[in-house]
Length: 84
Image (cartoon, rainbow, N blue to C red; front, side):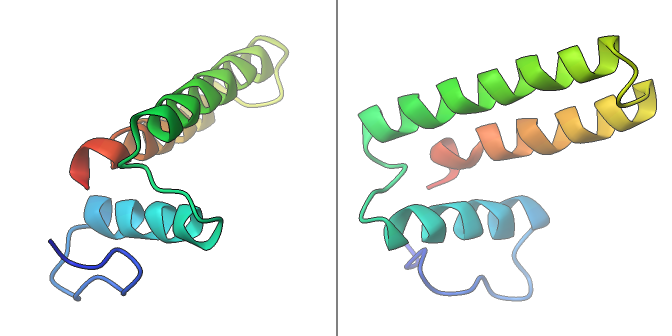
């Protein structure tokens, strides 16, 4: 398995580059998304961000297209623990 602290090779998919970037940030804090408790807390946090985004949409802060795009980005981040 490649060291997530190293940059992905140019041929890596955008999803893998995102995963590597997220994991590198956790490693800076001496944590890893391969730890089940850390991964669970990460998922809970992203669920809360999704809830906040839904509220922003309801209140007209973001439109439907923006909400969809941001939600897709959050979904990409949610996949990170499973790609390590």
